[in-house]
Length: 213
Image 1 (cartoon, rainbow, N blue to C red):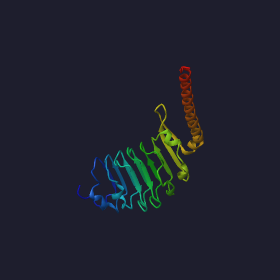
Image 2 (tube, helix red, strand yellow):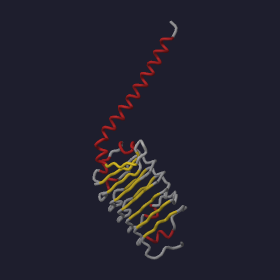
Image 3 (cartoon, helix red, strand yellow):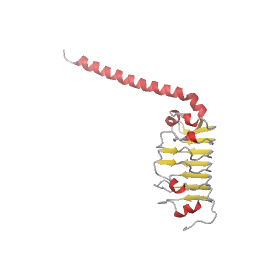
Image 4 (cartoon, helix red, strand yellow):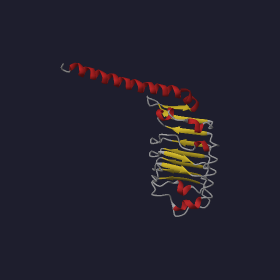
């Protein structure tokens, strides 16, 4: 398609793309919902999409983008209410600058196996009502500082337990067990260290005992 239909409001773009179509730049005033899937874009799609000021719902999923970072810069997407970043296997960091996404109400992130820390700048999303992290590890869930999302009414995590079952846990439940988990983790590490030290000392004693007088 060389040019989009007039007054196009909803796009679901599926399939591999070297880059986003040039006609995307003509949709700045009309598009309200955009879903990108399986595109395998190496260049940051936000560079092309950033002037879509009327966009209300944006989904980038199923490796539509294969870069390591997404940065929502100041002033970007002033009307966006829903942002879904799903199944982005190489994404390591997500950054929201101070005046970006001022009306965002719902944010879904994950699975993103390379992401080890909470997205940066979540404290700037004053209108955020729902924040969901999908299929992150228990280590990610229990060893984060959640002060930047304390203003969000619902913060939830979807994860797999040790038996592979899908579970749901909310932030209050996490905070009630977080200190307990951290303490248990520290105790396990300490026990492992002590066990290694004892083993090494035992070996040294055996070696010393067997040395000729």
